[in-house]
Image (tube, rainbow, N blue to C red; front, side, top):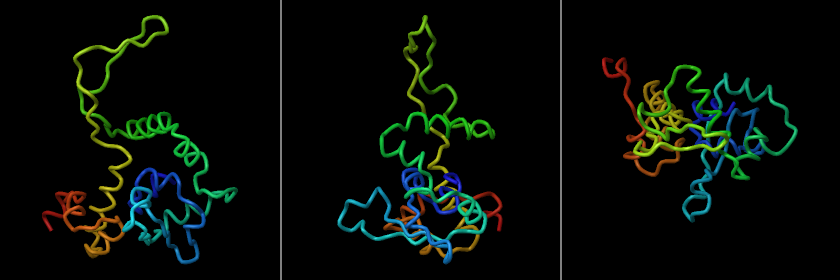
Amino acid sequence: VAIGLGYFCGLRQGDAFTLRWGEVDMDRRIITRVPNKTARTAKGKTALVLGIPPYLAALLADLPRAGEHVLPDLADRYRSHRMKAVHAAMRRLFENIGVSTVEDGTGAAYHYEGKRKVYEKGRPRAVVQHGFHSLRHSFVSHSIEAGTPALAVQAAAGHTTAAMTGHYLHTSDAAARE
């Protein structure tokens, strides 16, 4: 469901993880959400209005509505800053389907000496290639390729400028040929 919220709605990880049932209208198939990133700014009180495609609607319909949040475990981890395990799980998920998450040769290399983790010196910090935020890029790119008006995609992504939406747009070879 979290992956679906990222891909089909373009939600950032924190917004997907902390989505509340009160923001989901299954009858109208709409999510209304003020993004965490802009919620505290004066101009950021504007709620995004996002459509829920059929596949995501089916996933959401199968979830229990036991509490306030759509994904209570992830919401709890996100709010209590226990994200290391969630990031690791997302990384494993991407890698299990063949998507590399960091550039080869980057990231902390380490070995164990007994129970102590020892990091090797001289290796560059991890350069992230793909992760949860990549789903947001896919949302923008695929929405534009599917013919959704650019202004509608800009509004759904919560971007204030077309230039920012353009930053997220990655044209596929097929779209370029068309």
